[in-house]
Amino acid sequence: MQGNREEFSSRLGFLLAATGSAVGLGNVWGFPTNTADNGGAAFVAVYFVLAFALAYPALMAELVIGRHTRANICTALQQISPPGTGRKMAGFAGFYAIIVASAILVFYTLVAGWMLAWLIAAVCTAIGLGDMATWFASSSLWRDILCAGIFAVFTVAVVSSGVHHGIERWSSRLLPSLLALLLALIAYVLFQPGALEGLRVYLVPDLSRLLEPQLLVSAMGQAFFSLSLGVGTMLVYGSYLSKDENLPAIGAMVTAVDCLVAFLAGLLIIPAMFVAQQLGITIYAGDALIAGPDLIFQVLPALFESMGLAGIVIAIAFFALMSMAALTSSISILEVPVALAVEKTPFTRPRASWMIGSAIFVGTVLVSVFFDRLFGWVVTVTTQYSQPLMGIALCLFAGWAMNRNQLLAEIRSGYDNVENSVFWKIWPFYVRLICPLLIAATFIQSVFL
Ligand code: PHE
Image (cartoon, rainbow, N blue to C red; front, side):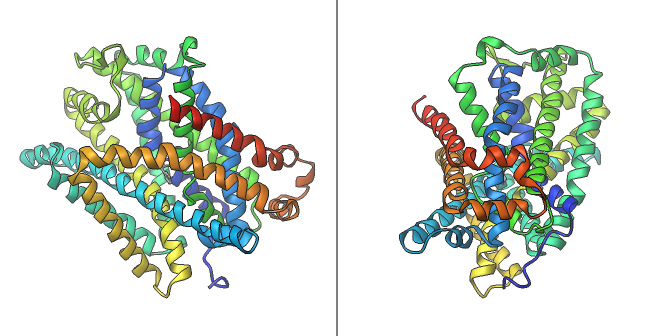
């Protein structure tokens, strides 16, 4: 199996796929929402610091383990662990990450289905199918299941076509398109009346909030989710990366682009809210800006509606952007369990993809049916608890299970002279001790807040 393992065809291919995984609903929805919730630019500043100080080193840990072992996360962690109990535990840790990835995909598919529903609604409005538009824009169990199902089929279809022909090809198409849409939407919104007030709220920090523990915790959770960490996604993508590539540089690029897109999304959403306010739409709930689903499915649609014909085009562009962002992420999540199945069972990739995709979709249906009881719980357990904990575990695996020579050899491949770089002077020590301690400290705060 190892001999004919697929690889990304080029550095750009990997960059587009990994950035596509990172850039998702977390950037376009989660980041602006968290910013609105946590004092505007104060949150943005803390987020950028944490993204580079905590998330980047953890991302490097995943990429290094992945490329070194060239395997799915279970086999990878076992391979670098000492035989005996250590190896067994490593297998469990890998399997746990796969379960968490699958659980994330369960709720991600549902939310992505909502984006698709609003996209279909906007298209129906454009072609004069008013009743259908109303159905797709009104929340109902059947709508949710139908649209999540369509989204799940897209996800599985891409993953079943393989790393090169599926994941890389579709990420390369969708990511540039979504960036173009994002820039066009920002350019339009920033020239509307009210936008400058939004820009002020977004960019002028409320310094009194800077040291609030809640802000730190939200920023860390957001950074881990946004960079797709702690569930093996980046490890698995790293396992398909050529030995000629410079890992620290590539990891830094993925982190930078992810931050940039999050920042740009804020530049769209927050000013758009203030444009909506000018048009008489309520954007505050009490003292705070409206966040969460009400922001995306009430404030913004009300804004689009009040813009007449232009609003229909903008709505189509906006929900297409959301759906594309979601798809390049969901394929990376599905790849985590699929990689294990392809490498460890006799199933072919298409068969494994459809089987695992169907099982996850059953989870999505359950979460839709018992939404009030299950949705918040699954989101909290996976993103607030499991992702940081597995993030710590993966740093420890890279820092302690792999020895210094293995680490150096892995990073040197594609980066001559790495011994003299700042990265090599800091990272190995940082990933062994500082990074896990910092993540743990923030995590403990989040549990006791
Ligand atoms: N990073 C994706 C986003 O921002 C979500 C994601 C989480 C993807 C975990 C892969 C793994 O939406």
